[in-house]
Amino acid sequence: MSNRHEKTDVILIGAGVMSATLGAMLKELAPEWEIKVFEKLEKAGAESSNEWNNAGTGHAALCELNYTPEKSDGSVEISKAIAINEQFQLSRQFWSYLVNNKRISNPQDFIMPIPHISMVQGVNNVRFLEKRFEALSMNPLFKGMEYSDDPEKLKEWFPLIMDGRTSDEPIAATKIDSGTDVNFGALTEMMFDHLKNKNVEINYKHSVKDIKRTSDGLWEVKVQNLANDLIEYHTAKFLFIGGGGGSLPLLQKTGIPESKHIGGFPVSGMFLVCKNPEIVEQHHAKVYGKAKVGAPPMSVPHLDTRFIDNKKSLLFGPFAGFSPKFLKTGSNLDLIGSVKPNNVFTMLAAGAKEMPLTKYLIQQVLLSNEKRIEELQEFIPTAKLADWDVVVAGQRVQVIKDTEAGGKGTLQFGTEIVTAADGSIAALLGASPGASTAVHAMLEIFKKCFPQHQEEWEPKIKEMIPSYGVSLADNPQLFEEIHTSTANALGLNEMNISASASSDVEVTLVNE
Image (cartoon, rainbow, N blue to C red):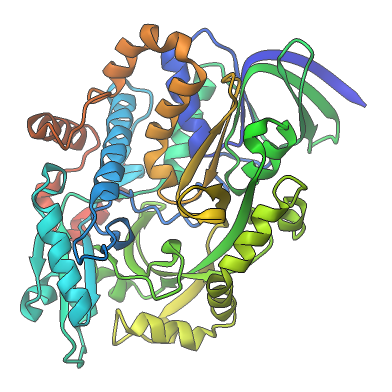
């Protein structure tokens, strides 16, 4: 039996970082709008945004080598790295606005300063890294980046990685101290606490079963209350689908033309987590390497200092894997269920094209813990199996679509926004850089879904995000001002950060 039929202005599906960001921004821009949130799990940020399921780098393209590909002429393409860094700066500005205006507090509980390092081995890779450094260090966004191929300097930067290294293979790294570690699970919970105080109705343990368009143009969402099994119906003028890997099946239920010819390919991940505190203390950086040939970009190996539950942790990975589920809490029928008459040829074309990726994922699934430690030993030569545990990370659903450049069934490695032509619905699909660029994604949704409000909202948007509409890469002085003000607001006092200061960081974290 149904027990509720209710109308509202906005419905957000999924209580992750995307819905949290959209809700928090809308409450500033249109405080009178009624917003309802439906989340299948019992708390916010528990699936794709959770700190154990999310790489949490604060993707600013400072160290991720897959954002700076080498072109056929040997030069390095940096436009994507600049774009992602610009987008991350938007997030920093909005988070700073939330802190400065008492919407959230204790920023050290979700963001911490940490050096970002790119490390490569082998003559060709060292040459590539040097060219990448030369290209990026000319740009104001990457000011302060250092390059070294001197083993003594590298020992200062990452002693744990250099300890016991016997290979005479060339090794080089770039380091930039203005990087961050972001706990998106904690940030999501903070933003939902704020939304609750703003009278946003947040319904946990509510699973969305169907989405239909009503005769008067509203979106009707059929929801099952998992606590009592009752079915409820809610209608809204605007609907946002921010359900992580679960967004694609929900988008397909809308039937909008833009949902056609899109498929999803789930990739799972695992991390090794260090359980020896002495080893954890020896490393203080995020160190990204180069992906192996045939590996998806989300499988770039990295040795990450993370701050989780106010405690310093050390993670290595991710090891890719395959599961047909679209969410960790999903069903083994998710992948098959997402194949529809309108996307079956797109999916088949992708299957034929991506055989090397499929083979790679199967090999990763079959890896033993001993083999995983062997991969870790390429980073930490002295690593021992006894010091590390395996943690299963979140599911990522890579978007498959037909593109002009890649043809039919092209696998997309990024974040995709899908909106209806009339702006009444938006969905977020895909993976990295995802959470780090959530604010940019919402600004895109405002342009596409609320063009009639753009003029009215622009002053407030500029108050929240001072660089809105301006390229920071082209305005070094503005970038310096904003970078300094956001660092102050978020407590990112980069001057005091060094590998030897990690114990001080612990004190900061515990002293809430």
